[in-house]
Length: 369
Image (tube, rainbow, N blue to C red):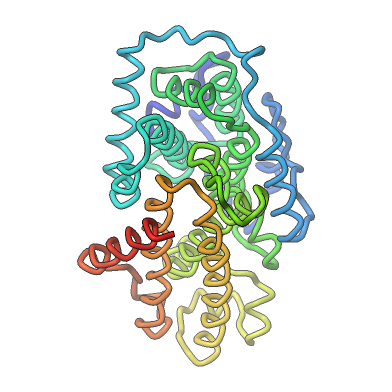
């Protein structure tokens, strides 16, 4: 999808703006990328300077208050047959890149399935802009144009047939645009920020690149009629799963990221355990590093627990994919521990056979609640 995305993101008024883009600077922060002018209605200042708790409250509030208005969107100029074929393509991509999650969606209603697949495909295309083969050619203007394309999609003017599936989803479920804006902003952060001073800064990044998915998906998954939590608490639980997953990604990929000159773990946490950036780049596992990793893993597990507490508040047909993602991703933390906290030279993962053993557990939990 990378070439298609670069062409599409640069379209709509001007040619491909990525040609000749400057290479990514080596410094840990580049204000030019952050402060580049926008054509979209997104604002880069959203949530800036807030604590993790404040970000959680505000992004949940924004996700819940904003929904599709049939008064402003245009009718989709797409045949029913073409739209169904596009949804099938979304399902194929989900099955190819998120096999376990795709399996979980089989228990959803047909309309829920298609909507979740459409959201997944949009997220994957967005991620490929900065993490795909052509990532070095992507600049802030490309992301700005991608945001404009998002706005058009929400307004019923999709760029292509795959975007049309999201336009259709917005009509069928009460999705707000802010989490989508925020994910693009997370991609933009990858262009200019490669150090995080404290956990509040890191939380914002984790929310933007992963927590947003939970807020996008919850309106589609639906809430249980007899849930014990408030709507806000249920949305916060969905957000917590995204945060937990991204924290797990960061801990798993410390070595890989350091070889690219990036450190995502909070610098003040490193200092608390007597560690420096140089220690991370050296890749030495000692007692300081083990204690540091124990602290980070405990934090990630706290968010997994918050997510687990909220699964029962989702509609029954939506619980299995959430449970399967939760138990399998949490297993990566166990694998880091089994590797004696060496995430520099060993990649922590859950073997396929173990995943297959986890799925019945997830199914049982989803059905018994």
